[in-house]
Length: 48
Image 1 (cartoon, rainbow, N blue to C red):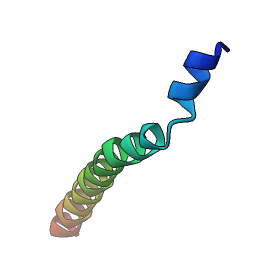
Image 2: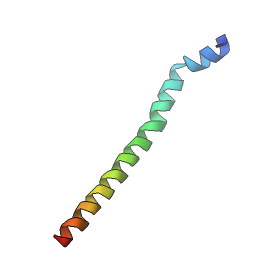
Image 3: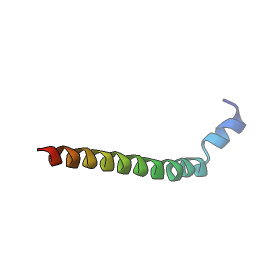
């Protein structure tokens, strides 16, 4: 890896932007999964 590439990779802002970008996507994914799971359980309970 060249020094310039390493400088970009090791830049502290690089890590923070990855966290700030990925965290909301992870939260949304978990929320959608929970909502889908809850609705399946509620639909199943309606037939019991």
